[in-house]
Structures are given as C-alpha cells and as structure tokens.
Length: 234
Image (cartoon, rainbow, N blue to C red; front, top):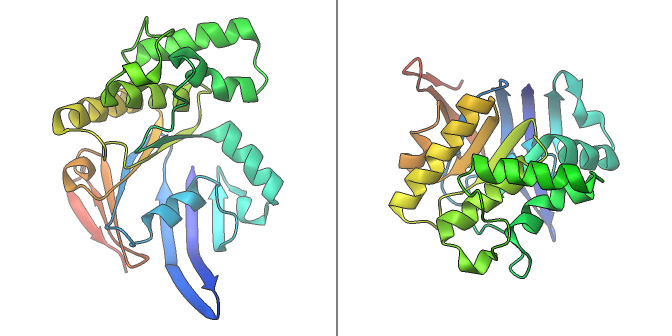
C-alpha cells in the first residue's frame, strides 16, 4: 500500500540546513495497525506529514498502491489527501459552536456529498464509535474521550484508505486512553482500516500489531508483535 524508499527531508532556516529525516525505508501493507514511536524532535511528525500527503517537499521515492506520488504536483497531493486519508489529533480539533453531527459531516460537505447521504452516513459512523444519539450535542458538553470519538468519526466518515492518529491519547487519562485504543483496534479488525498511530508512549505503541521506532530522523527498529521478533534496521 505505502512504500517509502530512501526518503530524506531537510529544512533551511536562515543560513542553516537541518537534515530531519535520513534515508527512511518503510513499507506499510493494507490493513496494518502500525505505531511509530519516538520522542519529541525525533522526526515522527515530519514522517507522518509525508505519509499523509501533507508535505510534498522531500527527496526519495514514495509509492502509493504502486503509483509514484513523489512525481506528483501539489494539487495532486491535495486530492490524494482528501480522498485517501483521515486524521485524528491530540487536541481533537472540533468546532465548538456547531453540533457533533455537523462536525462529523464536514469532510462529506467538502466532498460535495448529498444531504440525505450525509445524514445517514454521520449516524452510521457515530454509532460505530459508540456515540449513537449524540448528533445534536455540542462538543463542549462532551468529555475528552467522547470528543476524541467524535474526532475519529469525522476521520472515518469518508471511508479513507488509511487513518493517521497523531498522539490520539495524549490529552486523555489512562482509562479513557484504553477505551480509545480499543476503538482503533475495532476499526482495524472489523473494517480492515489501515491505522498509523504516532506516539511517544510505550504503552500505546505496544498495543499496535507492529511498532517502528524513530530516533534522530532514523528508523532504528521494526517490531512485529504478531511474529514477536525485532528486525534491526541496517
């Protein structure tokens, strides 16, 4: 599904050049539940910006379903992002003065979907995340865990090919974090949604089927929890 070959990323700030990602090689299969773990400044956010089609300024090869998207123009990246990936953030990024239903419906509205379909689909995904009947509530009246569920519903409403969750449990207590991780597992196992979770928390990383470590812009190891072996990167 996703294949990165020798991906490098640098930033220029003033007269200085900062090399953030170094020769990243990574394959992600459709239906995988992958965690990318690293401390602040390790390069994990930069990496997921490239994986999620948010950043088209990089060196190397990126094949998506065998299409060479490293050759695409910026407008093509935008279309790819809108049609293929859903995002879940640490701070939910909900619009506080509109209803839960309207928050979840936004991606469908942008895509030009018909109103009847939108209403039906919003109810469907809210039920899937355990929030059936919450359509008319406002985000401010919900707990942090419930708001994150709304964020997940919004991310999956367009049935994206893969989901990127950036520190999705970072603002939640341990009990609520566990519930959100169970929801991700459910989406992955029952819907075959490919999920990429970015975290600095080993407890979160350990729950994914596969765990990739990043340190100082290098992928250092790739742990498959099913096979229970660690493949040290060369």
